Structures are given as structure tokens and as C-alpha cells.
Length: 116
Image (cartoon, rainbow, N blue to C red; front, side):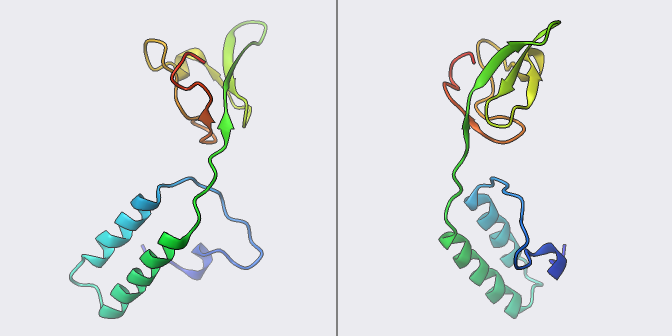
């Protein structure tokens, strides 16, 4: 994939706040530099990009908790951060374990090791 100017943030334009691991982004760039058919100036560009990624401040992960509520017919859970609703069978991971993060917004759930 070639990065076009339209893929880059333009001045004054908002970008989505995806939470990705810095190490994963750096590993992708390292994989690119390991391609033997890549021109030398591309290697320098990727190297500069890796250095820049090391300086990007980490994102603050939102915090939330699973809140159980009844809709008149069925019980469901919702994320206190994004308010996305989930039925128990969609969240339950076995035993008393529910996801440690909201599948919708990525919020880390308070008491994630316990049943919500």
C-alpha cells in the first residue's frame, strides 16, 4: 500500500483516536525495511518514521465499567464510557469472565477480573 497525501492528517483535520500498540506499529515499519528490494532512500524514511514513533506520547486509555440493566424484556450490559449495549451472551467469555476492554471504544473495564 502506498501512503497518499489523502491518507495523512491535513492541518485542522481530526483523525480517529485508534488505540494501537506502539511496538506493533514499529514492527510493521521494521518489516518494511527488511525488504531487500526497497530503495535506500525509503530505508532512511522508514528509519526516521520509527524514531518519530518513539517520541509520540502514549494515549490515555479511557476507563469504564460494565453496568447491568434491564430493558423490559431482557438483561443486558452497557459500557459506562461509550454506552454501547451488549447482551450477556455476546460478552461472556466463560466462568465469571467478561472482556477486560469494551469491544466498541476500547475502555479498560474497572474490576475487569471480576464479573461485571
